[in-house]
Image 1 (tube, helix red, strand yellow):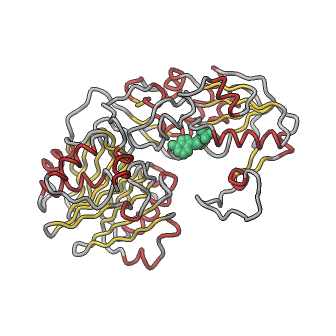
Image 2: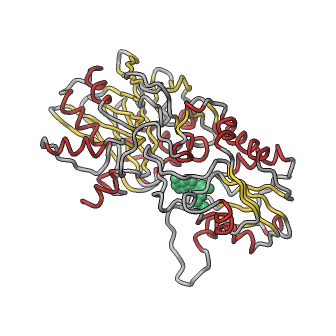
Image 3: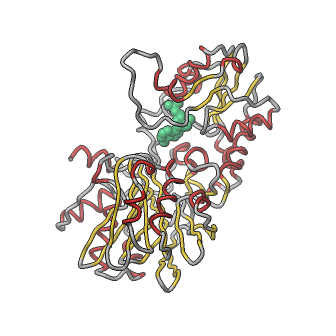
Length: 459
Ligand code: AMP
């Protein structure tokens, strides 16, 4: 997953992009970058780590110009390394192409092999670089509609893109619309963002989502649009609503918090439990747990507190502390849990390992019974469209029955939301969403293997 953001037409383009990335930080914590253009020079600033640690007043001031784009990265293809930081910039024939990509191309390896045969030299292992090569070959210095349309038509899989080609800002979404991307306005400026929470932070007004298969070109003449050939269905990623997007965002034109609450309500109807309290595992289960509590009339409690200052890595003490990784992040409130029959609402179970250690912590804090309800069905298949799920081998649901998962996590009972119940709660017909991770039915031909695995072995 990744977060992408772009601004056209503001003298504060880089500063606004910095704020946009700050709001989108949850979409990628590995690396971040900003590229700005002032009609003469293109400048970039990037690094490994969090947005707040990478940019300061000085670096942002140096990113002059009224066009900027930015990216926060969570690698799904290409390793987590410096050369794979985005936006990816290529200078060619006196012009430039910069790209920020969210998604995963399923024909990346095939395209890359073809291009390598013809002499292309790749600098990264990212699938996004393929788009730049395709564009650079055919476009020369211009970024005419037809060139971009032809390039994007060669791509398969998921892509939401923000690009800058010779000073023009371009936004595009694949014809299935796997990943979100929206347009906002801030005065005369145009803003493109993965999620609406990034527009809110800079006081930009949400205008609309970029439609599946739509490309928008933004320059001094305003916004023009073009469309890729239509597909007969859409495949919005349902996991954006379940786990990935921020609850204060609207993605696919629906508020995430309201959807998650509805998932919790549906879960309470399908899988009720006789318990004393309902609690989330903070923070991803919060909204669904509230919905469950409201529907079931079981009191909502906060049985665990999250330390918000934990980064991705922390220095382990030399002295051995049991379950340190879990403890440093979440601490149970014994007074809430002691002697209680606790119902935990989880947004999803992936490997089952974090849930297992959290349940252990709750038991040690005195919970009498622990039941879990999950606000989506079992995850049985890998994602080829940009969610970083482990391989089928590492996922728990394909290997174990629900009873076995219950026992592995150490629960008194475990129930999942049904696929139909999930779609009902989201209020959309089946054909709108990609539910491949729950059903194994993919909206496009899945690749045999992820290009990430193959390329990294070679490098
Ligand atoms: P586990 O118990 O190890 O399966 O972890 C489940 C938790 O991981 C869920 O409650 C989510 O909060 C979180 N999660 C879900 N999907 C992902 C993902 N793709 N990458 C990292 N964490 C995830």
